[in-house]
Image (cartoon, rainbow, N blue to C red; front, side, top):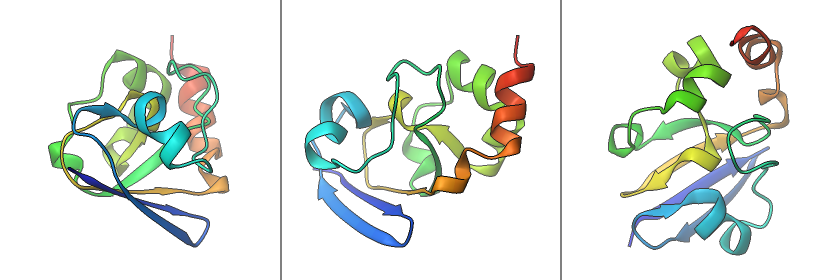
Length: 110
């Protein structure tokens, strides 16, 4: 089973999750109760995270991520609610990730 390591505001939470789990819907709510998320469908960006390890094992960003994150995808940012875990993954989720760059991308995406 893949291991997900969540680094959140300096705290590290590490859990095994079932392969092909959606990080919010199937794994996050029970295994990562502090995981930040909102709508669960890719509209609010509350779940934005920066992938620090394992990004190459994820599916490419979908249209929702492209619309909401824009250029921030190039910096390793992803919407956690859109991720399916297939292999080990490390992600960083900090309060300041709802930053101007993310909000700007969201506001200008049409």
